[in-house]
Length: 214
Length: 368
Image (cartoon, rainbow over all chains, first blue to last red; front, side, top):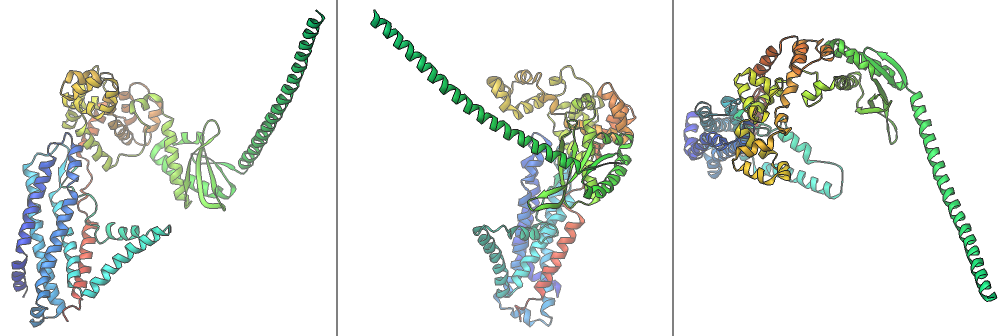
């Protein structure tokens, strides 16, 4: 069953997955190449650090697109295929989730290869070290978290999506109203801490992404 | 003639009357100013008197005691907290600083409750009394537990001890000494700074050239630091870093240097403190390492030693300066913090969130 799901889902996702893999492979090479002319190790690290958000965005984009593509055909066919199978909805969902997670690992393998190539073939300033495995693992976890979040959103009913969006809008509205009334209460900060500070939902995306560091 | 005499008499009389009037007016004015000055003086005297009263009242409220290496002055309500904190801090300082810890007792520590707008608050201030009797370096501790007050006393005590070291060592160091050990993060920073320094000597030191290390950390005087410490690229880099300052003095020379004329760069940097300043950050880690190698009595030896920085560091560490510098170079080269990219916390949090959202997706009612 899993093989069948994997096979059909691959056909839908392969363009995005392969494109993501190419970008993921090229990005470490490009970032080190762009930082190569720096006059010192400090300047080199500063240049390299500017690429950090790009890796986070790439991981989020791959996770998001693979999740949406995994469920889009089911939504379009009004879940006829899913309902025709002799398995529970939860199992079907788990199979879809698992298949997508396997595809997410393709760009992860590509970024690992790119990072390994950098550590072997590129000359980096003395005193600095490459961390290809740690870096690829970070990318893998970020992609998987993004994938799971978007998969859950895509799986949910329009009402649930409405509730999530409503909650986000409520926080923003509350912050605006509190600011207008000069109330000394900050709503956004605790929410941001919950989301971005470890062990927050998106904490894997925050912080430094450094393929090469001291 | 009589008319003329009368005229002279009248003019004279008028002058006398005017002089009298002016004199009377001047006296009144002076008296008024005198009164107002007296009022100001009285008000100032009263204010000084009130201040003296309040100071003596506050001083009278402090209990003096001595616990471990600390001389304490604390409000009676804080006396017990002060004693507990001093005991904790003393044990720690004696373990780390050895016999030198006793030098902290020269400076009294004052503990007071913080006066809030609505009366006393829970917070406590810890301050030092300087040689003029003035309380300085106030630190607010909130909540004031024995451990937190002890940490503040320990910190202040170490700073005070460091200030007691003689000027020669501090001048070589370019900063205040510290007695804590160098963290892995600080070693990592030192490595990046060493390989990034605009100095050929620093880079040769990183590669393992010991004489260059001596020069880099300022243990060997250089007759021509601009040429010996810096290479052409380093001089160019250093001038560019401080170009704004140099341009104020010698605009054309700076421009020629930045265009690649090394002789102009040498001229600009000759005698400039930026040359040695660029390498000064490494000295503190060398001193800290010397104290770490030297053990608990190293600081006492720092106070007792004299001579060149090299001789003093050797005395502090209890090993020859060459050995100390070699160990410093090894630590700079090898010590590093783990990559920030991945640790068990990131992995655990990510897997947990993946499981949570995966479970939510499976519970969806959308396909029913």
